[in-house]
Amino acid sequence: MMADTVAAWVAIGSNIGDPVHQVRQALRALSRLPDSRLEACSSLYRNPPMGPQDQPDFINAVARLRTSLQPLALLDVLQAIERLHGRVRHRVWGERTLDLDLILYGARRIQESRLTVPHPGLAERAFVLGPLAEIDPGLEIPGLGAVDALLERVDDAALQRVT
Image (cartoon, rainbow, N blue to C red):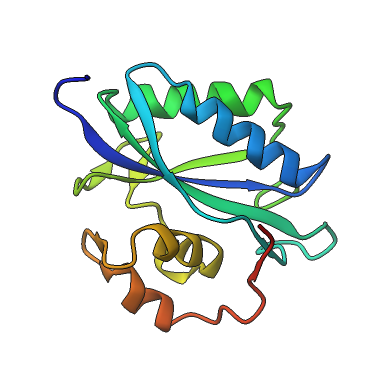
C-alpha cells in the first residue's frame, strides 16, 4: 500500500451534458488516480445553481480519497480530469460539464495562489456539506468545526438526493 497517505475530499459537480453520467464518470476517474484510493463517495444530489439562475440544476457529490499525492499534484490531476470531460470556464459559477474541487486535504490549511483548503465557501454550501456529512458526519473541518454542525446552519431544503 501507499506510504504517507492522507485523506482528501473532492466535491464533484455537473449541470450540462448528462450530469449524472458526468459525476459517475468522475468517480470512476477518481478511483483510478495514481498513488490514491477512492475510499468513499456520497449519493448524488440535485440542487439549484448557486450563481446565475439561467442554467440547469446541478448534480453534486463528494468523494473521499486516500492519497500520497501532494495537494498541488492532486489539484493538477483533478483539473486534467475536468479537461478530459470538456470543462470550459465561461463565467464565474456558470454551467459546466464537470467541476472537481479539492475541498479538504487532511487537517491541513493551505493558502496558495492556485489552491485554498479548506475550500472557500464550504461552510455555506449545502450541496457540499450534505454529501460530505453523508460520508463523514463527525468530520472536523480545520478552522470551521464539525461538518454536521455546519450543515445545521445552512438551508438545505433545495438539496434532493438522486441516487
